[in-house]
Image 1 (cartoon, helix red, strand yellow):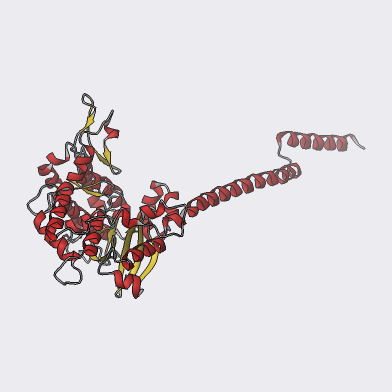
Image 2 (image 1 turned 45 degrees about the vertical axis):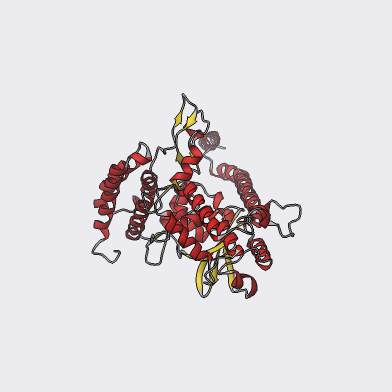
Length: 444
C-alpha cells in the first residue's frame, strides 16, 4: 500500500477512535441509545404500575367504607319499624312505609351517622336526611332492627300533658337559642307542625317525633331560618327522618364525585376544579351576593345569632337561576350553643377552644379556660372563601378593588359580638361592588 493511502487509512482509524472516545460515532451512539431505551422503559413501566397500584388501593380503601357511608335502606327499615309500632308518626310516614312513594336516589352522605340522599316525593325533587348513629353501633347484628326508641324516642313519656310538652319545648329552645322574646311564637309553630293531620291535638307519637327532630341540629336551624330565602324549605318528616327541598346545584364535587372519592383530592385541586366546572364569573358574583346576604341573616335574626363553624365551598349551593342556597346547615350553630360548649372549657392554648371545625375562641392562659366569644366573625371566614371563588376570572377593571375589599374583610378580627358596625360596613361595600358590576346585565 502506498504511503499516502496508509496515511489516509490511519487518519480514518484515528478519527473513528476519537469519535468513539467522544461518544459521537453514529453507529456506536445508536447502539448505546438502543441499549439505554429498554432500561428507561422499565423504569417508566414500574412508575406507572406503582401509581396504578397506589391509586387502586386508595380507591379500594375508600370504597370499602361505602357500605357504612350509604345505608339508606337501614334508615328506612328503622323508621318504618317505629312507625308500624305506633311509636312515631309524621306527614311522610304513610308514603314512606306503606305506599312506597318516597324514592331514594343518589347517596350524598359524608358521614355514616348522618344519611343524606337525593330523592323524589310527590313529583318533587327532595333531599332525604336521617340519623342512624344507634343503628351503626349494632355491628354484632347488622341485619337486626336496632331499638332506637329506647334512646331517641324516649321523650315525652306517656301521660305528659300538652302544657307540659309546651314548657318542655320552650326550655329546650331557651337552652339552645338563648332566652329570646320570639321563642313562644316558635313553640306555637312547632306544635302546629307536630299536628300534621290537623285534628287539633298532638298525640304521643307526634310529640315523640317532633322532640326527636329538635335534637337534630340542622332541623332546629331549618325551623329558626324558615323565613329566610337562603335556607332550604322543610317539606315533611317521619320520626326524625325529614325531607327538604332539593338544591339543584351544589358544589362541583357533590355532583361529579361519589362520596367515597371526595377525600382523595387535595384542597388545591378542589378549588381548581371548582373554577373549571363552576359557573361563569358573573353568575359566581350573584351567588356570592346571596352568600353575603345569608351572613347578614345569621347576624341578630329573629331567633338570635348563628355561627358558621365549617366554611367550605361544599356548602355553597345555588338554584337554576343562580340564587344562593345553603347546601348544609349541619355546621351552623346557635350562639347560645357555642357559648355553652366553650365557656369554662379547660385549655392550654386557643387551639383547644374550637367548636366544629373553625369556630375558635380565645384561651385565658391565666385561668386556663376558654372564653365564650369567638375570635373570627362569620364574614371574615366567608371572605377567605370568596377570595378563591371570585378573584380567578374576575374582570380586569374590578380585580384590584375586589382583592383589596376581600383582604380588608378577611382581616376582620376582635370578638365576633363586638364588630357589628365594621362588619356591616364591610359587607355593604362588598355587595355594592359586586352588584355594580353585574347590574344592568343579563346576569342580574
